[in-house]
Length: 105
Image (cartoon, rainbow, N blue to C red; front, side, top):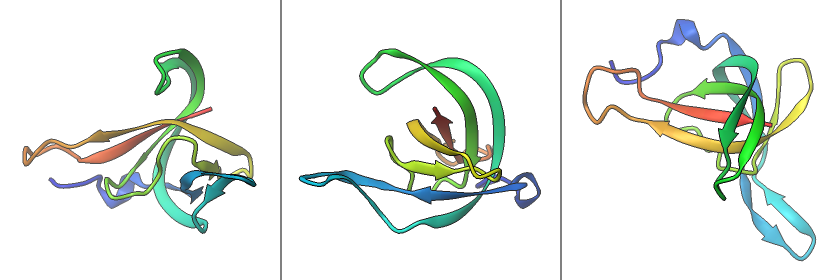
């Protein structure tokens, strides 16, 4: 198994990948539709700076999805969320479903 099985990718979100800050504010890549599995639920996660942050949901996407922290994600119901952390889950050749775990505000 190399990635998430297609039948699990039941949701579609729109991702605007964060590209950095500029004199005019944050810069984002063009919006891209991403098939994923969205798990909405509140839990505490660690942000990049080590602080505890409340996450309102987690999405599981193909490993090659461009979705760094601070990216904007529009959920299927139209709500917009921000990426807290994007964690690569790569089995390194083991028969596991490789994927990107994205924690959302």
